[in-house]
Length: 158
Ligand code: RBF
View 1 (cartoon, protein in one colour):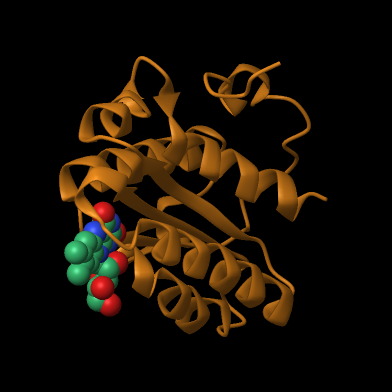
View 2 (cartoon, rainbow, N blue to C red; view 1 turned 45 degrees about the vertical axis):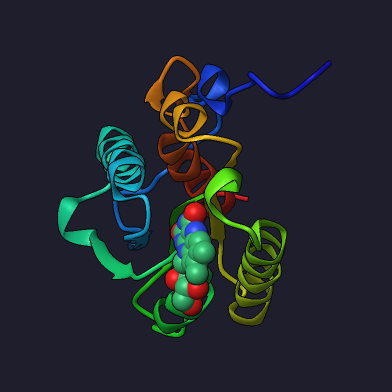
């Protein structure tokens, strides 16, 4: 089955476990801000709905998605942070080196998670158009920021 329209949201409330003492960093790319702000709002509201304390969530910004890896590393190195949620949006039509950026982020975030042994979540939309991105940032295909938050919680309860 194609996963193009699948969301984690439909099974998001199972096996979440306790989170009220967990501390999260959300790293947000400023590039394509209209989209990434929606991803952030989705991620934050989901964390709070699941019982995370607002004082246990810190928000940091990076200029573009390419900087998410280093931003994630800055946050993951702190023992006070349990999980890092990275939010960005790379649009193919506006980014000639789209593949390089997306691949670099995927490798970078994987490496940070493995290095610090913490969930580092890839909440980066990689779409052909702005419209497709908006559809996945609180539009008709849900909010990938919310799904990134659920993923972080699930991995903390692995
Ligand atoms: N950053 C994004 O987060 N999303 C983009 O769609 C995006 N497109 C870019 C297109 C061009 C031509 C350039 C030069 C940069 C783009 N960036 C984008 C910024 C990139 O992630 C990074 O911040 C800069 O390349 C500086 O390292």
